[in-house]
Each structure stands twice: as structure tokens, then as C-alpha cells.
Amino acid sequence: MATIDAPAQTRRTRELGATVRGVGYAVLLVLAAVLAARALYFFQAALAMVRWPFETNNGEATLLAESRLLDQGLLAGLRTLYGPQPHDRFIAGNYPPVYYLLWALKPGAPAFPTGRALSVLGGLVAALAGGVAAYRAAGGSRPQRASTALLGGAAFICTVPVFQQIGIAKPDMVALACAACGLAFFEVAPNRRGTVAAGVCFALALLTKQSIAFALIAATIAALRRGPRALLTLALTTGAVLAAVLGGLWLLAGPSVFEHLVLYNLRPWNQQRFEGVNSKFLLLHWQLLAPALGYAAWGLFARPRSALTYYPLTALATMLMVAAEGGGRNYLLELCLAMGLGAALAVGALLAARPAWAPALAVAILGVIALFAVQAYTVFTLGQYVPVPPTDKSDPNPLLALVDATPDPILSDNTGLLAMRHRPVAIDDTFLSELMRERGLWDNAGVIEDIEARRYTLVITRTTEEEALRQQWGDGFVDALLANYRPSGPNSFIPRAP
Image (cartoon, rainbow, N blue to C red; front, side, top):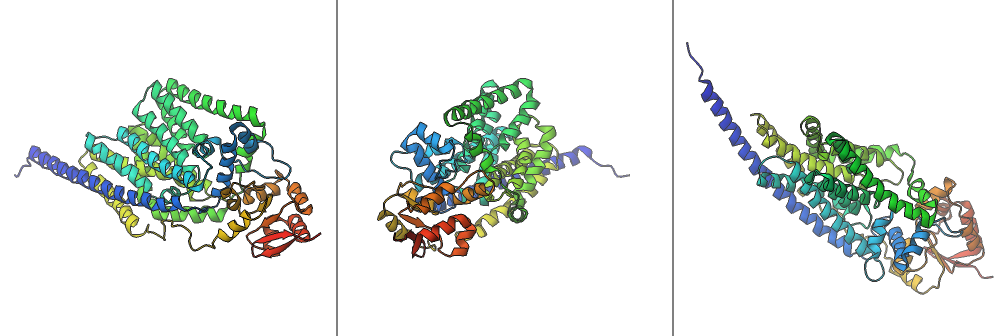
């Protein structure tokens, strides 16, 4: 009767597992390098957007105009930005102050390239800090952990919302950089000092953009698993920084701070946007999201004290936020960071695991991530997903020349024309002003009075068609405009003769 040499069979299984593990680490290193090269390409492509002198994305001009308020005087600018709305103006001020302050720190007047450069820098810091957090959470030798960290940071940059956002003058990337630094401190230094540093970073993220909160939530859950002392330290630190800054703003500008930072950001639900944005996002990024969620499920039992365990789960909530009226893919940035790091950690954890089947599963996941890498090179291309300067749009220079030739005050629904020339802006966010007017949080009666008195030397609109104007501004505004101003071009009105 034949017998089985059990030790020999076990040895062969271990040798096969070691071989597959070695292949897995080699593939991990190659894939990390391939995605890192593509990430560098996306940064290079963003530089063309940074240098573009005009507005490239709705909202950039609003932030430029508002950062200019702080550049002219910090305390007075903060009062104007977050105080009650003036009688004849609308100032959005719906972001916390950190990004405005950073933009205003540049010597000279704020300009679009400065705000975009902050986003590029924020994206780089977020990738590096996220990689540091992944390095600490990953298993294996130092080179293996470094490969895992590189894969996580590079995969994050290669996601569509990220490489589209890093060239836009918005606070999202700076806020995400602060959150990623918080994760890095929380993972690298699991002690009181590290938790305090993490809490400060998480507070700065919230003070840059209110919605970048899911890294903090993940860290809060992990701190709870570490013990009451860690949770209390994190909560007190974050709360103290937020209370100091927001309390100071409240004392400076009054209770209208709540209106600007909270009520102005409550938007109606848009089901079509929810389904459209999320379905496309999942179609393009499932190769990262699936492994990240798998890692989170495993980490609940194996790594309960790591914030990166919970991050892919908490960041899923961003998929609800895109449904807000006026929302977009930028709300998914935290999910991009969470799934990039989570997918890399899933591979690293399996390659470092003892079971014989783990390396084979890691190689399979690397194959799935490789599909994403192929997509990053063949689908995420210039002019398709990678943004380029909007040279196909109408030339703004004629309108800028008209602004230069006209004295103040000018009323314009194109905030960029006035912000670029550092001219006073009456309404710095036409979309938000109309939304707040419909909800009874702002009254445009003061602007209508100025139109009826013909105080504006020039009115610039995106169209002079009456029906389109009524849809955008409302009947009262348009009735006053047509009664007191006459068209002087396809985008402008001048006062009628007395």
C-alpha cells in the first residue's frame, strides 16, 4: 500500500508559496512603479492648467475674489467674508478660512495660478502622507512596505477625481492633504503626541473644507479601539482647535458665520446626479474599491486599531454627498484616497500573511489593480479625462478690455472678469446667491435698487436673451434691468439715457 510523504508534500507547498510570494512582491514593485510614472504624468498635465490665466472651473473666481478680501486686510476681510450680507452685495464665504488665508499669503495680489498651485501641492502632500500611513500599517520587510506605500499613493493620484482636481483652485486638495497628514501621525506615532498631532491636522482639514471629515471619523473609531485615553485625546485636540478658530470667527463676524458655513452648504438632493456620477465612478474604479473593502473587512478583526482599516468604509459616505445640487466628483476625493491606500494594503497584507493560499490571492488582486493601471494609460488620456486649458471657449479678453475701460461699480455674473482686475464684486457667486434667494436667506432688493438708480456703469451677463436672464436672475431683477439699461453687446448692458 502506497504511503504519502507528508513532510515532503508540506515542503513542496511551502516552496511553491514562497515562489508565488516572491513573484507577488516583484509584481507589486513593478505595478507601483508603473502607476507612479503615470501619477507624475498627471502632475505634469496639471501644470498647464495651473498656468492658465483665466477661470477653468466654476467657483474658482469666487474664491479668488474672496481671498482678495483677506489680502486687503485680515480682520476686516474676515468680517466681510463671514459677516451679515451687505444691503447691495452677496458674498458666499461658504468655506472655512484656511484656504483663503494660504492663497492670500502670496506676495502681491492673489491670482488663479497661486490657488491652483496650492491644489497641486496639496495633492502631492496627500499622496506622500497617505503613503507614510500605509507604510506603517503594511506588513513585510521595509522594501516590501515601501512598495505597498508607493502603490497606494500612486493609485490615489491616478483616480479620475484626483487628477482632475489637482489643477483647480479649490480647497479640496489642501483639506485632503491635512487629513492625510492626520492619518500619517495617527498611524506612525500611536501615542499621545501622535494623537495630538493627528487631531490638529484633522481640525485643519475641517477648517479648510467642512466635508473632509471621514479620515477623522475613521481615526475616531480606531482611537476607541485603542482605548478611552486615545479617544479623549483625539476628541479634545480636534475640538479645541475647531472651537478656537470658529469661536474667534463668531466673535469677529457674529452668528452669520453659521449661515455661511452651514446653511449655505445645505443643498437639495439630485437623484439623477447621484446615479450618474456614482455609476461612472464605480465603472472606472471598481478595481481599487473592491480590494480596499476586502482589506477593511479583514482589518476589522486583524487590525482594529488602525484608522486605515475603517477609512474605506467611512469614505463610502462621500457617494451620498455628490447628490447635492451643485455637487461633483470632487466630493469623492476622500474615497479615492481611502481606496488607493486600502487596495495597496490588501496586497501587502496578503503577501505578508502565513497561509499558503494568501500569496496567490495577492497576485490575483495585483492582476485586478493592473487592469486599473492599463486603464490609467489607455483611457485616462489628455482631452478625454485629463483636463486641458479651455482654449475652445470664447475669448475673455474683449470683456476684460471693456472692464478696464469702465469705472466702478460694475455688475457682472462672471466674477472672474472683476476678480482678475481686482475690482469690487457685487455678487461673487451667482448660483449660490439665487439658491439662497429662493430659500429666503438673501434678498436681492438692494441690487435691484442700484439697477433702478442706474448706479452700475456696466452690467455684464452671459447672455442678453430675456428668457435666459429671467431663469437665472428672477423677474424683478430682469424687469429693472430692461427698464433702465440697454444692450451694448452680446454680453453687456449700459445705462439708458436719462
